[in-house]
Length: 259
Image (cartoon, rainbow, N blue to C red; front, side, top):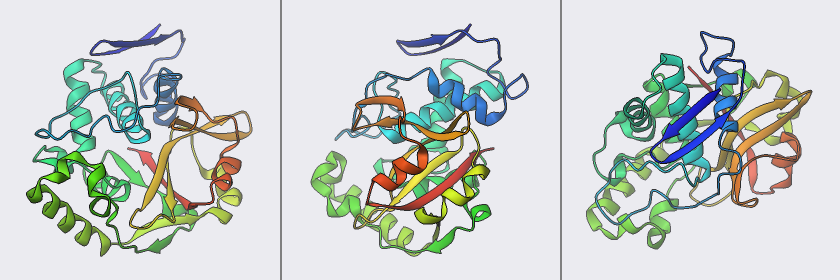
């Protein structure tokens, strides 16, 4: 019996495997098994957006796509270390969610995925493996949050707004690696269970529009994710390739792997 309990929320499932890379599961399979525990948990947008002082928010009763990924990865780190405790989970969640793992105001949270990934590479929690799939370096002006200031309560504060503008300006100078959506199918066999998949977007000022985990079901690749369309954490009924191609705003993907 595997039991994961954080705050007041509990998910459990029967299994003969240990939730640990030192047991019978690989890192990727560990991530998938933990992610499955949250299937049917409701989708809920904006769970981290508050006008008050920035603090670590733990919510496992509702997820957006990013908080689902962060929660599962934090639990996977707990499992890998053999420390499945509330305090260890919170420590790992803060490490993953914040720049250098430190809370220092609203802008210390890693709001943009490619910025999130770059910082988590530095912390050695994940590795961007996109270049193994012949990804192409891209640069884009990133300013979605400050362009849509009214959607983010914390940005009503002029100091936080200016800090976010500076982060966006610096981030816009850097490259990130995207595998073109038309070239993913021929390389999908290299994608592993539990890989983090981020979908690059055409949307102005934004790098990534959605994120989830790769999951193999037999010979077919699918996506395990918190879906706004389906209103819950689900395994996509469509294959991964069909799902990706069905969204005209997606331009390609970035792949990151647990380390």
